Length: 154
Image 1 (cartoon, rainbow, N blue to C red):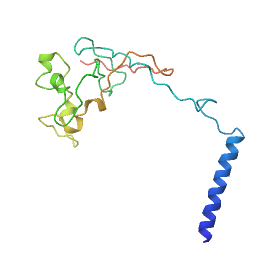
Image 2 (image 1 turned 135 degrees about the vertical axis):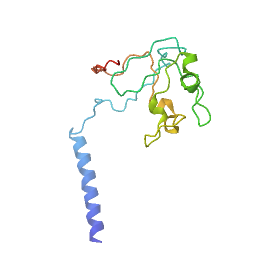
Image 3 (image 1 turned 90 degrees about the vertical axis):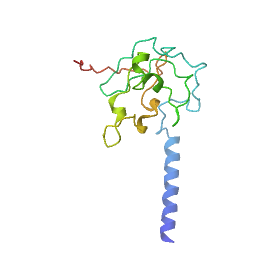
Image 4 (image 1 turned 30 degrees about the horizontal axis):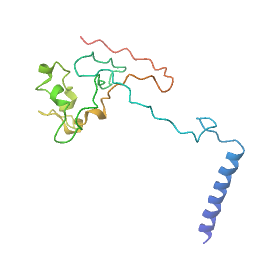
């Protein structure tokens, strides 16, 4: 009984403290005074940097371990499933030369323990989990990020 009364008193004290702090102006939002204003979605989806695969250069990476960015539209691609992955029709080990597309990285042929496999690993099957398509849109917020100089491959 004593414990439950203590818990109720603590909860009441916490609620009153938060209420008083917000009324005294001690709590403020990073969004400013108009917190209730909702964000507005863009009217239309911006265009992808490249429309059709194979018609544009690769996008430079900004740090050494960054997965390559997708330089073409993917909106009309079929959804990746266990049965189908349309990305592999160009980037798979048996098609990349014919399609003049970058081949899947060697890391995609290793299991979770790092053992080499003949086929691409199921843990790397959902390409867009790491590889992101790029749209031609202005930044939403100011960005002062500076790219890291990547080592030159010999």
